[in-house]
Length: 170
Length: 170
Image (cartoon, rainbow over all chains, first blue to last red; front, top):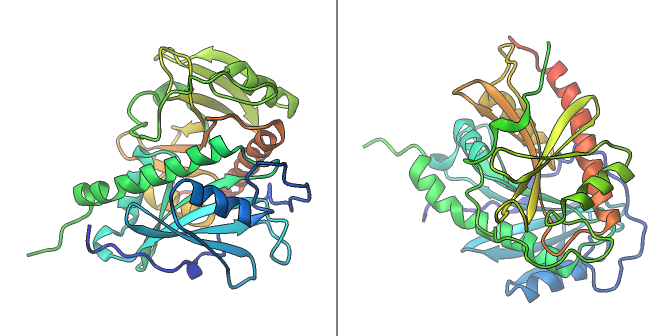
């Protein structure tokens, strides 16, 4: 869907809310994927055939820019202290096309789809997110499936918007 | 405001849609938690101090009843083949006791602010569904699954507060 765009991730941040929130102070086990070691996340994404560019967000926490199904998306790191010891990840993308916006549309997605949560920011954009807990570490096989779910559900986005978004008036 | 839960049979078929979704035909590795081995999920729940009662859904897939933060909830198993080799689980509660507050707007308020849990409103019966999907392909180690449970229990704890803060008519 040509009109869809992504907004760079800067808008997120207040969202955390969660409180399983604790730093992950354990050592990332060999071969595992952990938010405490951002390079393990980068390597797992690259292994799955996607690009992964490691950066830092406005708070100094790690941030990964990646791409799937023609969409650019970001992976935010949460539960960090001074940019490290992060305990979880969030895959995140937003769409600023007004045609695909609205809380009814977001709700429709949430009634029909698993894993990715859609929300609508009034008058601004819709966004999709997928949160992953990494305390204890994630096996490469499991992380590959997490990526597969994200990719697969992103792949459903164009069809979902085509079928359900309100059409522009003629 | 009185919220009750709806026993889990409502969910079942329609929701899945997804597609990363192949069955998990590999054996569950020792000490890991896998949907393909439902007892490992029950054991991990109990190790974390929660009850876990294993049964079967109408479709013949495994299903676990548990409780946390004052709510009874269900864990449904997905991508199963003939009730086995399941590859993911969904923590779920459906609230069907609408006091007038249930709406797509309420669900969106949650989805905007909270992580690890997806709320949706079904206008046909005015129920609210609350869920958290986790892929278990490749297995989750005990520590990571304990963190998954902790996130779910934490978000359930926040749910009670959220409902009080957003009563009908406000």
